[in-house]
Length: 175
Image (cartoon, rainbow, N blue to C red; front, side, top):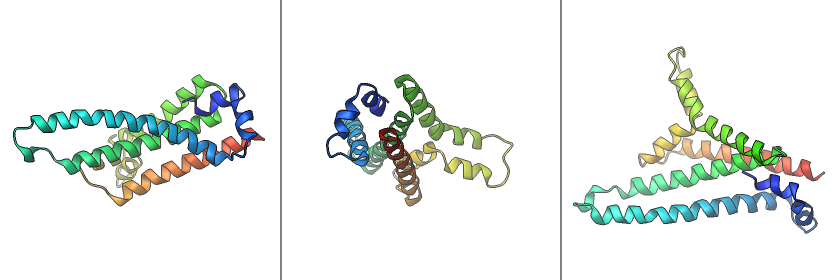
């Protein structure tokens, strides 16, 4: 969560931007470093998949496409969370505030719309519309082994939106 905050606090950003580096490349470096760590942890978790596969009594009991789809969903969710965290870090001047803001934003997009859509006060299609804005509902679809275009568009929209605002905030801090 301290992607951008720490660089601006300790003066590393002054050194970085004295080189031919634009805010897009700066942002991309931070996102790729976060995604590299997440990707390494996902590779390590593949050992449990292979263990379960070797211990299964019948070869056809494991749905490989569903597992691949779930890993794909986790990677996309991690990219969304990384974009949100980078945005939160770009608007904050304190590491603790950036962490809390990123946790709150990630929780909001993950659970709150789905929770509100369950309330009995909503009428018509309002509950469906609110549930559509929840990351949880799109991740649930991916975990069933279904890759829907609307889920991919939703994930891409969140990634592009938070990335755009993070890059804009980095540019503002450089002025």
